[in-house]
Length: 354
Image (tube, rainbow, N blue to C red; front, side, top):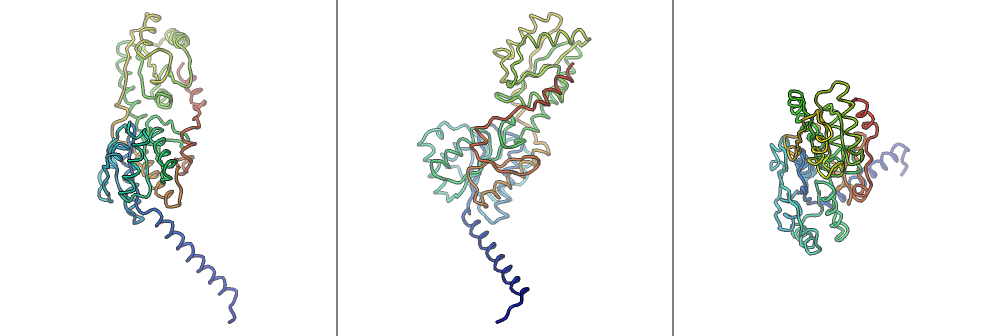
């Protein structure tokens, strides 16, 4: 039989398409049932990520199982099948629909064995973990000890996870902090007071630095820079000489200028008699509230990206966003490589706070 060149090309194209389709079907069938949990501190936008995971599963005709109360709920077998309607009307809500909890039991070999057993008995083939570094450490343990497929989605207001430009919840927290500082500034200006405002950031100063610049703070103290109290006092004295009658100092909770922000406040008041010093700790209001549009979109993109990664056969990875593109990095890289503080932002802060 004589075949023309064109017919031969058509024949091979058809066979190639058939091969690709078969490979995709095989790939999808490897992961049929996916579990999702939220762990650690809650962050606005977690619900958007849960919603995206559940609905991506429905789109690909996979089963999705919600695990309540994080790893603790996994050990206690609090697992429920979810569908697209299960996650309606949650994208605009703060916190996490699946709840979250710290789990001491999961830190033990016995606890993780029970968690894995419950996953297997529920027929779950892979697990999506939404959280921060502690949550990802737990996911890595499941992968290392049981070769169980896991994918992480970074959700923490501290923005302290390597391998992603932004974490879910960070943008909302920033806006919450700036709004709070704006209100405090009204009081500071009315009474010629100096306010020390503590924001979250045990090991990372992203919230303090960005919110401080956005709210026009006179000084910003972050863990990445140990500027010392003497530099702070000198800076405030210069500000006083230039006519400033009130000041806002933003302090990340991990900054070591004092043992705590109240001790720092006492020291400043002792050395700057012209100022009436007040301390405000914003605390957990930074975690709450309706997520910003950015966090809703980010959560949606990362949730879909997590399911896409599992269907590609990826595991032990985190789905992040780098230069506006969805990327996957190993959980080990996400946990071990230190993020660098934006030196340009620090320079901008120094210039604009005079």
